[in-house]
Length: 417
Ligand SMILES: [Zn+2]
Image 1 (tube, rainbow, N blue to C red):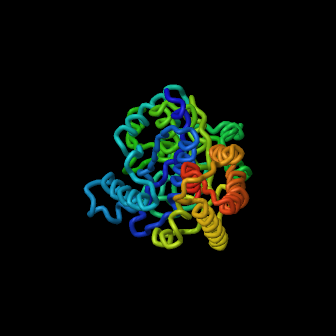
Image 2: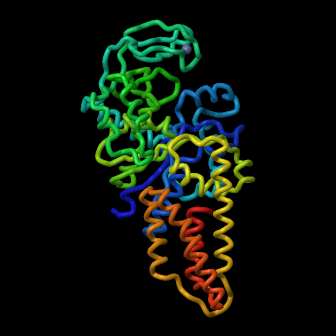
Image 3: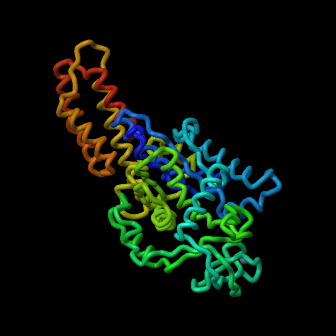
């Protein structure tokens, strides 16, 4: 096993929503966060780290979107594939090419086979079990909404509000009383996890994880004919699939806070043998690809994914504008300093060991998610050291060693460009 592959960061399985009509980039923030941190880790360690993308293609919203435009596709899987092709076209424009990335979808045959085996093991060991339970059935479409004890709103499939109760054999999982254990040492960001904890404390003592739906992982092999696995369980198990495939000891998942909190308990309960940690990201305003291009891809794809991890709450449009202005100021300053340090002349000086030390500290800060500390040091470096160099050297008629210029440019590319 290669040491650098023991620990990777990836985005949690994202719902493969339709971004064809809405060419938006804000939904890709978790992937951009994972990519950016991975780049810094690679820079720091000098080793190549795998890129893995997880896609949740079997959700109810996808089913609805498919039934609305079914005649245009050969199959449900074809529909999902076409959406993914579209997404990778957008990602490519954001500097994430599809090549070299491992794409794992929950509707892939290999994923389905792996999930089926895993469900079989969890069933045999009694972690998940079949029980006869009263469930709420939608009067209009017959969808099995939830177990009886859960208060009802409207049917997920058709929106109808009238239900009746029936006894059915369903697949269940118990949620332990000690809810704290489900997230202990798992949340890297945010620092304040009060709202995540309160979500966990609202979970019922047990949850139904089988569904009656047209698409999904059939549960016939454990004796539940006609049922499929709740897609959220597939999503929660997928991290273990990556861990097995890449022989990891730790996997960090970046995801929107709301979606991730729905998966964490099940990943904690149903997987084992590795440590899983989370970056629960705040929401940012809607940004279309066209808008991203006009405000700058360096800002959207490089700077913003880091900066959001210094905020405690969701980012409002006016805050985004403040962050953008700050970015313009900083990059303008950096560009000016770097160009003033460059020259074709032969006489040059090197970065001092103290400066190299600071640059190493900066990447270390980012690798260890001390984003604010890293950014402050970066800002200071270019303000103080950078300017000092520029002034001193111009005074003496010296220029910075071209190799050191490259180093500075590499650092700038990691965080700003
Ligand atoms: Zn219904």
